Image 1 (cartoon, rainbow, N blue to C red):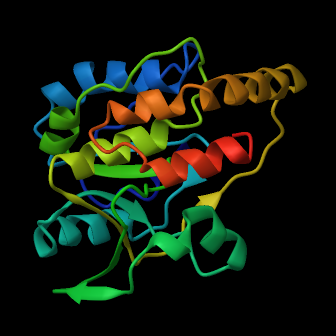
Image 2: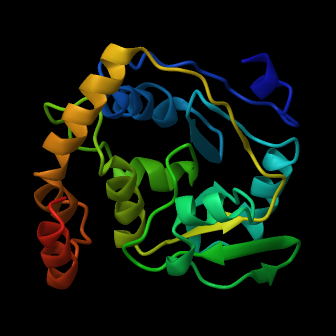
Amino acid sequence: MARIQSTFAMPTEFHVLDGSDGKAAALNSALHNIAAKTDADIYVALDDDTVPGADWQDKLSAALCDVPSVGAWGLWMGDDPIMLEYVGVQRIGPWQRSGSTEYRVLERGHHLVGCFLAYRTDVALEAGPQPITDQKYQIWEDAWRGRRVQALGYDLAFVRCESPVVVHYPDPAEYEVRKRIEIEASRKIQDRVLATSGIPDPWIVRLKRRLRGG
């Protein structure tokens, strides 16, 4: 928490959420109890294993003004091949520049990685709460939130910045087992849930997913 707070370059409301009922429930609660009551222009969802770089608030503040067509931002994770695969670089456009902001826009239907999402607060509120299911770990939740933003007519983009640090620490064995079970269960309903985002997968994507068993 101290490492994250050390990156704050401007007044920031910082809330630690209780995720015991799952990420969707925690974020829905934050949307209702925090985002709906703040006068901040940017609303950020940050995973507990991610520490953004020292320049992230300055970069996002500039991006908000420089690129009004973007409704939600991610921080560029760096050019390491592992990170390029992680963000799905094959579905991300080339670097562009507007004002002081360098950024890459995602294809429609692609999504930002969920470890860090920075929304225009009004866009987050308009996108609304995500579906709650029996699974606390939802394989599709990042995609659902991103598609909601795109369905509202906004782009998703990564901003050039100091790369975030992903902190690796071991999870309890029982959590890993439960996570695998819930991932498999959530895969079975992801087509139906993603359709509620306003941007369902095209039939060819759904067919390929079923053929590979996921």
